[in-house]
Image (tube, rainbow, N blue to C red; front, side, top):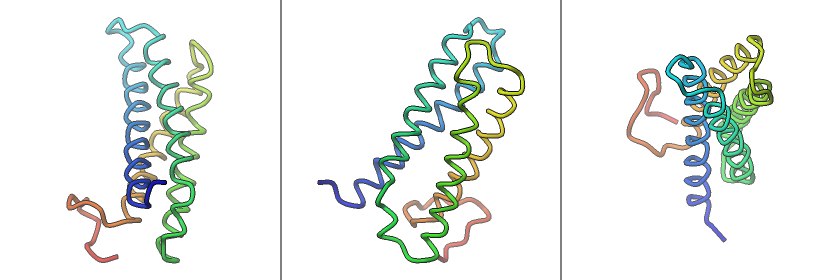
Length: 137
C-alpha cells in the first residue's frame, strides 16, 4: 500500500495533468482556425475529465492527515475542483457544443484554477510561492 506522501504526489500529478488537458482543450477549441478540427480538442477534453475523476478518487482519504484548518481548505479545494469539472461536462458531451456550454466550460476552468491555488495551501510542499501566499501555515 502507498504511503500518504506517495498518494499525495500521485493525486497532485494526476490533477495537474487533468487541468492542463482541459486548458489545452479550451485553447484548441478557440483556435479552431488553425485546422485542428473539433475531434482533437474534444478528445483531449474528455481525457482531461477522466484524469480529473481519477484525481478525485486518488485524493480520497488524504483528509485524515490534516488539521482542522487544513481540512477546511481541502474541502474548499475539492468543491471548487468538482464544480469546475462538472461545468466541463456540457462542452464535452456534444461534437459541436453550444456557445453557452463553451462559456460554462471557461467558468469551470476558472473555478478549477482557483481550486488549484487553494490546493497548494493545504500542504507546504514547494518553494515556489505566489505573491499573495505567506510562508506561514
